[in-house]
Length: 292
Image (tube, rainbow, N blue to C red; front, top):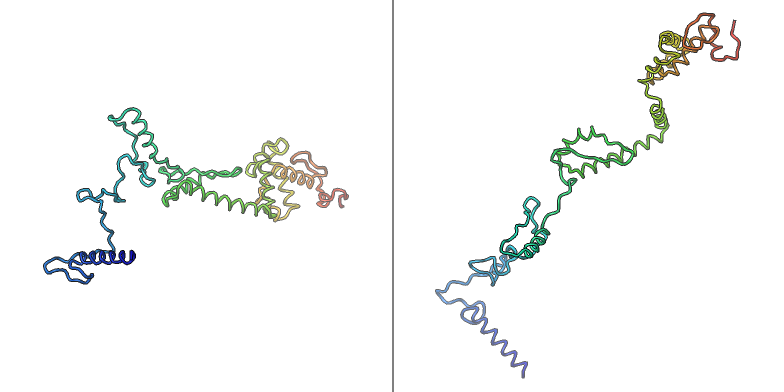
């Protein structure tokens, strides 16, 4: 039968192969003839030798670690670093067209320029941007810059840190503005923006034509009389703490009150004149007749 004939041939081939491999026939347990060195056993941990490799040129014949042959397109990981990359130098053995084509291919290997925000600034200067309506505290940025550079923060990382800080500060400011004390502070801030701050009010009062100039000393004396007569220690404390005691309109008002306490008739300007003192109740309740 054909099947039996083929099977016989396979068995004969296997027997011959085993006999040659065992240097004596039979199986793999046959002892090699005396005097012959034992065949080295293959180490499973080592890769099999490449049959196409050369003794003189071991990297030829398909070694995956071998350098790419000249003219092969570079792989993604083979692109040189920005500092190592050089411009193409024309080959005098090639034509202008060939050099032009070679330059195009060479230029494709040029690494992309690094984004300045992805590196630590060499000069240690960081540029921070803020959302609309928020002003960057450049003095603080410059003060923190040496620490940023020392810990290796890139420009992008410093910006991310600033964005998070701005987000938290904005949230806190909104929460504060929603509280009564925050609303009062915002109203005061708006007033100061329009009318100046307390440190400038005294100068404005001294320059006022009605209560300042040559009238200034009398104005202050009369205003102090009003506060001492009708006011309280708490009122004085408020004037000093808030700066309201320097406001031209407060000084003008107190000077008029002090003049009314001293005179029968209120004075037009700062102070001055003489007369019978007016009862304090009449100052507070002008519709009532003076007592006594």
